[in-house]
Image 1 (cartoon, rainbow, N blue to C red):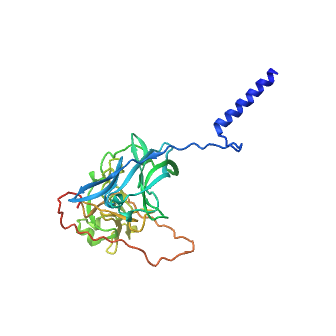
Image 2: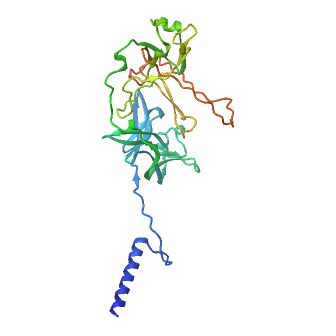
Image 3: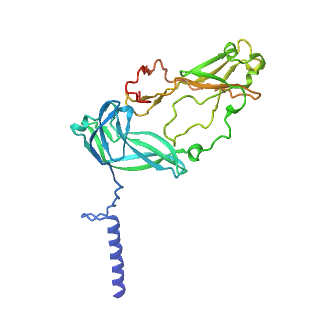
Length: 348
């Protein structure tokens, strides 16, 4: 009798433990309880006025807000996490609560920069405390597909998932520096470019720079440069430590003599760069990063006693084309910056 009582207690305890850990419904079925993820909340505030360049902008505000200045001060929230697994990560947002903007808030938003999703922009890896971190920008505004109304994000959950792309050694390691610049020795000739294009350097051009073309081996011609995009203002972003050698094409170099019909081809860049923003609407798919301090990119040519870096031939594809492109959308900008009315430095 005593033994059967103990068995009954054990069974009852086991059932009770099962019910507490898994949940129990009135119909007698055991139901698994899914734990709620940690909810993150955005603490929205009243719209504010921001005075910039003599003009007052009405902007949305919340705790830890940042703004895209080139998008009429569209607000965004910075997201970051360490890449401990050694691979790049992407944030996955699960929306729990949204709220339609009030009439007052509506006037502070340029809808042209919004889509039907709470978009995540500009994912990049930066190093902090010798550990690579993933950084992203979350735009907590969207246009509801069904109602057409503008909504703000109130609460959400955030998970980081691996993209499978390995964090590069450059992004993983701390900064390292060259012992000397390549410009510390040899004779160098400065070449300026203003547009993205392939540039041709013929015999007359090289002679006009002071190069004795008859005494050089064209196989030893080298061109160094890093393009001309304006340097990032963020110290954590990648910066070149020294000039890199560019792959070039030299016509007729195989005989070791720079003849009258020989020439050099290299790709030079503009100081202003167009960026492609995937997932954007048509109005914001491309953005232009203007160089405020220069209108010319400079490359450096030298001739020494070692062969230079050359463009390698690529075998043509044997695949049958399935689509023929007969046109494309181009981007043009007209911005002369003839006068700086507010004398504000880089903000022309």
